[in-house]
Image (tube, rainbow, N blue to C red; front, side, top):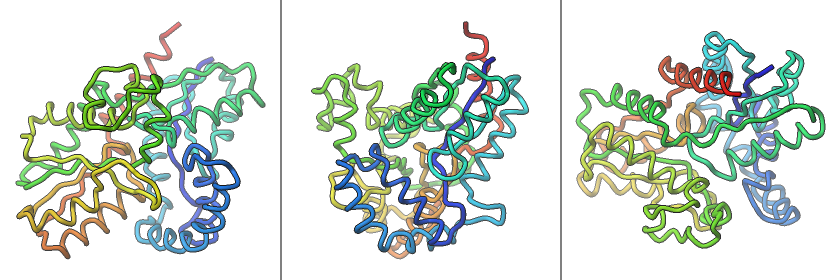
Length: 339
């Protein structure tokens, strides 16, 4: 019997420091997120980051927390409920971090008699710290607890025509009647070394401005290329003039060289260039979360206005949009029909 496991990032149980700290510990101690040897990672995370970050993050979570709970969880559950209503095979929802675990999701499917699972990381672009860590953990659990289960992975869908149309339609709807000076495509940042580590050719990804536009097998796992390709396809779909948009990367940690240009740096200096009305879209996420609701919709907006900006539009993610739900359901149907 076939079934589906949708997997998103996860969230603390509450916006209180006591719950944020173990969530951050699980997240940041993941070797695919901070990819250094265990002892060094433990020193960085538990010796430094977790001393102050839980209180800071808790404050940010409190700003976006809903009565129903974490927006990421609530929106993911709404999307899951709609997908399950349309699908004719079992669909479970899990998170890479937190209590709604992948192990729990696989058990739900196993208990329903599922032996063939479509693993569906809810990330359009492939990255070590998102897609890979989900696949590795799921395989570990399968090997230990459900050896007779078979997995089929949903590859990065950054260039799938139906996904691009869903994203473009959401953007078009929110941009209608808004005469922006600049549209910012803001993707979650990752360290440059992650790009090089996922380079299957071990030589292509030089991050020199040329490699992402030069055909290569490396592109199948290159987050940077896939981000630029997502932007290119949306720009083409919506016929956005070249001078009207920019691509940036957000949410970096100090101490490493991360993908540039940085979202906050670029947005902060726009007003001084006469760019007073902007719109920001976050295509690395299909579900609104801390990085979209607090970092962009609140913090980036506030900084933009403090620097002289006049109007700031934050475009929501696809969340449980009916057209996106239809696309996900269609992909599940394709899996169901496959031999």
